Length: 72
Image (cartoon, rainbow, N blue to C red):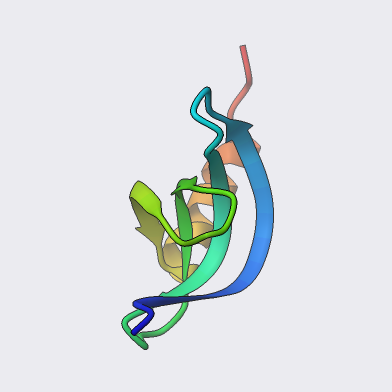
């Protein structure tokens, strides 16, 4: 049984040397409320690496922080 459902692929952050891609997705884990998720995936989305999940509320805060910061 699949542990996750990707509701929306938001974008690719970077390819890795092993052919996997670090992605930002809106995903539900174990039939829970969807969260924003940053992690590496293989091209078929059948295997994944460690990642970070961010709730909608946390994403609002993160977006505001990113909008305020300067990129060096």
